View 1 (cartoon, rainbow, N blue to C red):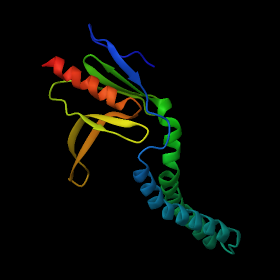
View 2 (cartoon, rainbow, N blue to C red):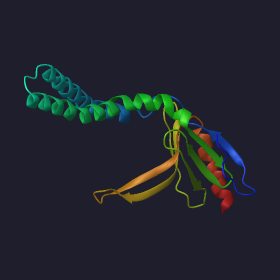
View 3 (cartoon, one colour):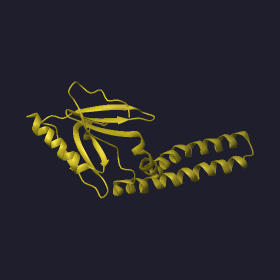
View 4 (cartoon, rainbow, N blue to C red):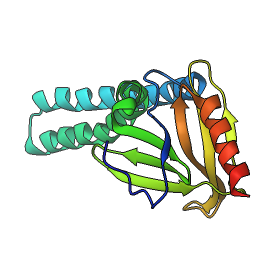
Length: 181
């Protein structure tokens, strides 16, 4: 783990990572079922285009077949992402995400293709939420209202997702909030 930029007097109280496995089954299964038609249509259109390419009698027929095959690729990609993405995430999230709780802040460190370090200060007014799960829970410690591209308001949450010691970490943060008053 990359060393965290701790301030003087700040000490690490807890470190962890997401529990490996398939979490939030209902949400994941819904996305997988939603993506299945995209995947099937993408595969069908792509291979139909390739099949038409082998039977093309003229250059314009071949061009239409290539266009048809290329038209299926976005559907194939989106469907593959929605159907197989949760399996990839279940197997890799615990390798690329690390969490740390210090006496002053919560740290979320992501490595891999899009590395980042996010720091969330622990204040008495910090919104805190415990979302227990069957195998692992989530401690939400940051919520912000944001507008999407359509102008609709939505809540963006951040915290320690799918950790085994969720209740313990939740109580540690509550204690830090009480000490900060």
